[in-house]
Image 1 (cartoon, rainbow, N blue to C red):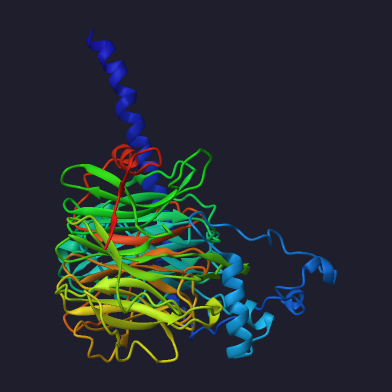
Image 2: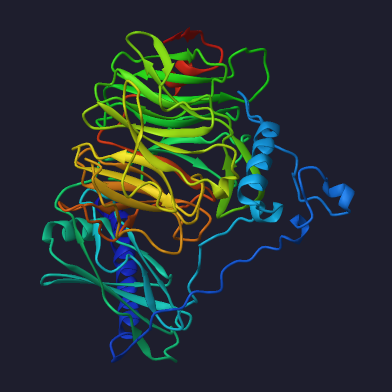
Length: 577
């Protein structure tokens, strides 16, 4: 028996030992490639490539009265209008645009159709250069392991060096992308202070010199971000036929869970929590059902009470049921939303920017305890678009966006307005109105200190020129452009963490087409630090959409939430106020 044991154990011991020695020998040989002197890869600031230009000649002679076929011009694909359930009056919208665009602005059809983009790409680097993380980046201490990325057209093997205090780590990789090992990332958090990373590159056959990149420095913030983000994943371009699913991500790991499946027949959007905790309060979302069946209510508001695990559909006392961009009052008893809303997508459609217009939109209030809903006096004017409401921290007023109705989305410039929550005369917010820009997506920090919002050249949805601004919550300004923005791509929809020290936002800075989630640390003075990306091992060919921070994992299952808001369920009829 002893002999048999020795025979069996021998290979078990010798084989792993041999593999270990072979691996160690190979690693040592690879490390020796970088042992000599290294040349500094000095890369000056790279210029941008020329901006994209689209051939719009097919649109030059096109008007709403004359078809492409009559002009002998091949129609662009899918030129037929896409209808929106619940009241999207494309004919009404186009008629309004004609009345205003020609009479007021004198714009030609091609000017109205042109879709300008600010997105620019830099020329590829001729030498080794780290592209991510940015120098000076600040990471949440509760974020999972990130990556380091670089450009290098010359080399095919690289050595990554990481240093913090007296500690230093070295790794060899064959790819231009390297992930921090978890044990190293945890040790860096423990050591703290300023951390640096550099990359060396050379040829595996030893035929080239060793280049070393400039060092990139980063640190950890003194306070964490919220542990969870709820978002949608949707592939561009935006249109009413899409049925994106919703997910919840624990940023401490790579774990992404289904939050609410669209089941290929729903559009669930504008999800908003009444509490930043995420495990209490209520959830509101807008629902559009897009499949067959005999249902009289196919567009409606959905409410889910997280504490009682119960939800319901809402039939509003308005002729148009579309109700988007909702906001909970501080006490969680009232809901402000964009009511009587109609949406239309317009051509041409390009991936990095797109036009979606609203013929109508009013601000309404839904009082849940009273089961009443009403249009807000002073924010429901027939000749204005009133949209994107947000309660002030004390609950006394609402900030919302206002612009003349009937303009092409490229010409719409929203002003931020403030109005008492019971209605009245709205006042423009200084610095965020009448400034030649479009101002939208207002969000107050949970501690009541700051108001953040977006601005763009015109319009609001899917604008490549979008940036995030910040100002004091007393609305006495002036607003400042956050330092975390980039000037060549969109930074748009954003959400505050429960401790008011982090913003999660959607950004198209990586490629101009797909929105990824970024985090920026907001210090005591309201200044933003270089943003870091939510680590994702396998990126989908789609955009991360409407991210919402919550401190805890919402105790909501896909099955329970779907059962509460599905089209087959009964609807609560809300009385008019």
